Amino acid sequence: MKYKSTRGNKESKSSAEAILKGIAKDKGLFVPDTFPKIDKKLEEMIYMDYKEVAFYILKKFLGDFSDEDLKDAIEKAYDEKFETKEIAPIVKAGDAYFLELYHGKTLAFKDMALSILPHLLTKAAKKLGEDKKVVILAATSGDTGKAALEGFSDVDQTEIIVFYPDNGVSEIQKRQMITQEGENTHVVAIKGNFDDAQSGVKKIFNDDGLGKEMENHGFVFSSANSINIGRLVPQVVYYVYTYIELLKRGDIKSGEKINFVVPTGNFGNILAGYYAKKMGLPIHKLICASNKNNVLYDFLNTGVYDINREFFMTNSPSMDILISSNLERLLYELSDHDEDVVNTLMNQLDGETKKYTITPNMKENLQGFYGGFTTEEETIATIQTVYDESKYVLDTHTAVAYKVYEQYKEESKDETKTVIVSTASPYKFTKSVIKGVVASTKEKNEFKLIEMLSKNTGLSIPEPIKNLDKKPILHDIKCEKDAMKDTVKEILHI
Ligand SMILES: *Cc1c(COP(=O)(O)O)cnc(C)c1O
Picture 1 (cartoon, helix red, strand yellow):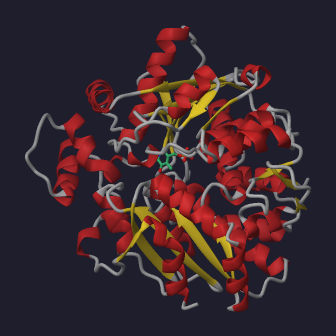
Picture 2 (tube, rainbow, N blue to C red; picture 1 turned 45 degrees about the vertical axis):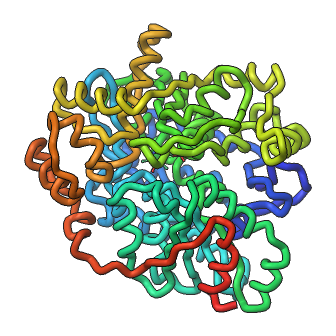
Picture 3 (tube, rainbow, N blue to C red; picture 1 turned 120 degrees about the vertical axis):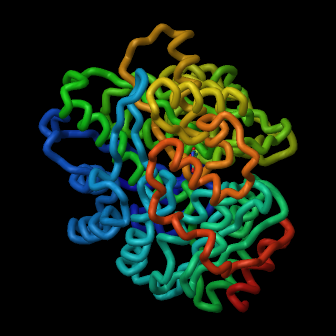
């Protein structure tokens, strides 16, 4: 299997090349040219643990890596860094299952892919004989940044530079990033929002002049954002794992379809679910949950993607995004791999109109998706209801997903068993979560709130944030959104 660009230049790359490059020359994203199929009976896989499922899936997508390399990467990624032995526990509460993807070091689902990406990337570099230092650039709405920093910290032959929106992340997210240790880590606050950070990073990647200069100084760029296919593939694993686990528990029958609800921002997580479906996993609906930034909801309902709209900062900040990069990969599938169509649509989005409309055929192919969104008030109210009814504590992103699930059920009367993909620990967004759990409080200090949340719910405070407020601040660079390139050059001394 090879990787091609969504935008049609005829580059055909191995998975190692695609991971190392991050983004294609024509600005497109790397996509598999054909989908591998799950060729084992799912009911025969019920004895596999998370790592074994990971090996099975990764091997299918990353065929040019040796078994030994893949196993080594998997062992190093999914170890005791995760607070639970299962890596991704599935909990039943209310009338849904919650797939808890937040037991890694940074308390968000980004750890699932970013704890393995550095290993895949360094192995790819070695395989390809790359002797330059790899500079990882990442834009973050809060969670990718910390997970990438954690993953790449002091990894040989790499530097990592993370850009986050100065006022667009939670206090805990910010603290996690600016206290990051590691000689090769760099954290920059930009005066702008996530879309500015993401566009800025893409611009740097596509700056040929800068690329040359970098090469002369012994550097190459790569990406830790979900535009990198090395982020997506490890995310396919937990969809398959969930299905197998429910089979094992006897909660579903062999072949029975299930739904997943995914709180969505950049469309990476839900796309991985779609890839799992393409591999043959019995999925009925992929339910895309958005917050007040409901551009995806509109798209799924009308076929029009239009970013001419106000950007809101909400209590689910990791989803405060207008340009969902990975939608480009979905367009490629919806159009049956028609690169010209993808190219045209992406040019319209990048150009003056800032919107595009998909063809009726493509719209037809959207049937397996459902889109919904919630307001901030509904998000808090949902945390409260779920807590009152089942003593289960949701973070704001997961609450968005649960609320959208309720809307979906109401509307469709669909009784299919459903898994809510839980993307963050409630402790990462305590300021908002506390409002749903404790009637009201005047306390503003986020670290006091963490203690309060724990006292009220009996939920223990995750190890990685226990002493976060006492850690020294190691990063304080700020820059204008137009000065990202200069900042990169300064950091690298070029
Ligand atoms: C990144 C993130 C999301 C959005 O995931 P995408 O893959 O960008 O769609 C949702 N919730 C949390 C907590 C996140 O960190």
